[in-house]
Amino acid sequence: MFSSRFKWNLETNQLARLIEEKKRAGVKLLDLTESNPTRAGFVYPSTEILSALMQPQAMHYDPNPRGLLSARQSVADYYQALGQNVDADRIFLTASTSEAYSWLFKLLADQGDAVLVPQPSYPLFDFLAALEGVQLQPYELTYLHPSGWRIDFDSLAQSVTPQTRAIIVVNPNNPTGSYLKRKEFAQLEAFCLAHQLALIVDEVFRDYALVEDAERVTAFDATSVLTFVMNGFSKTLALPQMKLGWILPFGAAALRREAETRLELIADTFLSVNTPVQLAAPAWFQLRTALQQQILARVKENLHFLATVVENSPLRLLTTEGGWSATLEIPRRASEEEQLLRLLAEKDVLVHPGYFFDFDREAFFVLSLLPRTEIFRVAVEKIIAADDG
Image (cartoon, rainbow, N blue to C red):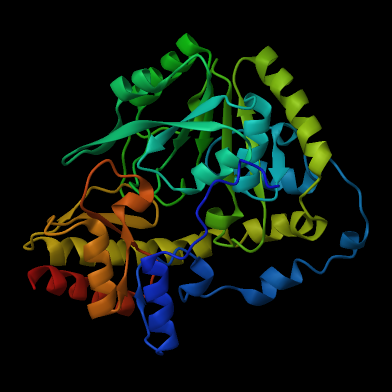
């Protein structure tokens, strides 16, 4: 009766059952998987955020497939502040970056076609692709100490098939925190041209650089490759509940215009972006700097503490350049899952295992850097104590 796209086991796993048991017992977990900024104790200008929603124009429906011009112009102004000129008429607004992915899969791939996706990366891709009837083909990110993570181009070449239609790059990647570099991007463009592939670049964490690097690039350096840059309010403004994302096409003019024409038809079919959020966008973008400064200060402080305390421990902190996560390599005294469950059962600390992000080997813990500093420090100390034990 149901679609074959829905392929996941819905039974509760052991980790979810243990979390529920802890909560029923009234245990306050030290949650280092928290990625929701609205639950991490940041100070939001609530009055300004909510008042921007109360505009009389919101009572009128004037649909535009690409989104209201005022909202698109606010996105263009955001890029202008970053030193990048963007034409507001080229921007497509979506209800989220997740929806942006689904539109691009519709645009680029037929049923059974494939998209290359980095590994490690966020597991949401598996759901988004499967629900569109698209296959995922992983390519590896390789860790080189101390420089960090880089695209494994041998793996990329081995993963491409005649059914491959696009490559996804997350810049910076989640959870590795690695940015694209100039040499990498040049190789990536050449690879896409050679195999006639589009490039999908997810830049939701682009504003959260933790170190300076002159070799870092963004997809705005794309030239002839058909490229789609995505971003949204979830990370840029730390407002995941105010659903707004966007797609910005680049590439050779004729191919880009054809993509825009087709993308406009997809957008016109759904018209999913609500009017109040679009009208509020210009005012909300004015709050960006203050919100991001809070998050960056927290993330850097937690990362510095983590680096300090693991320095003389058996744990190894992998290089991260940006984003909200840190990766610990832990001694493989047991499987990741066994160590994860023991940490939760005995120390009340919750972390993500590496397999959640499709790390190609064990053992890793991925920690969110968003939690309040006092929570983060206690949790990290318990992780180290658990390893010593």
